[in-house]
Length: 424
Image (cartoon, rainbow, N blue to C red; front, side):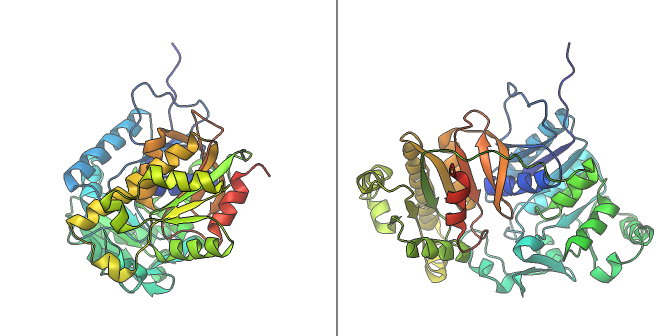
């Protein structure tokens, strides 16, 4: 009987774009990585060349008990596949309310694996998210002063990671500042050992401003069985595991038209939408009132697209920060779910009509789109922007899927995505 394929590394991510983000950075660091949408079924067979698996969950905005249960199930599946090390990936803006899920999920995994501590390392310098003196900065400003303070589901009102973790985690944090990271590895580990004395579990919060910090963090903690953070640290961690460099799959583009759907109301996605509009593209904007009344549906939107014969239409939702603030209620959540269902249904219809390049903006939107299309496992293709790879479904390698977190990507991101997924 053949020995079952074993993997080196396993990761759970708290939403789908976070999962694709993590998978791309692992591939850049030399790990041959498969991304799975949800916990794979028992019948799922890993390709022989696969070395790492990222499981994308929906735990960012899930009810806490469900988030913990799903996360533990994911960790158990990864361990069953032989993963020597596991990682909990969350957003580089530490998206979570005080009642949120980063703390409870981290605590549950620490206790499940019976390991004393882990790092909290959300930084992603490639996208201007760094940690300095324990404070998370986004594009040079503290998190609580960034556009994330207006997020409709997880408004961020604090910037120090320990203060974000205190209300939702059970254990104490130790900040490791940049000046301390310059010390010898033995000195850093001695400091951690002194802090850990008498504590059942604990968190370490290292500064992370650039690649040198990443290398030092990995040299100190890269062999720990459980780590947490954003995707920034994953390339250095993968190199530490494999000793290799980039193994991103160089898949060619595909033929067929493209469909773009954007449910994110982030500043970055709004900027990208405006850029795309300036190129003369076909755009269809979702209307709150028309969606709620049933006047605007996926089918009616598809008719507009079909009649226009557009090669790459964008269907999008947008609201101002003030408008989003007013929607933090049951009605707003119902509308957000309706937007996701509508956009994912449009993508499904399009994919059945020769639109083989599907580009989605926004974490919740991307998760809804992949679920609707029915693909559950992907190879990692070329990277369009940091943390945003092209995904190729294992079951249909004619499709090119691009899923970006709302805040990711350059101004001309949609143009880049169209060019890189096309045949040319």
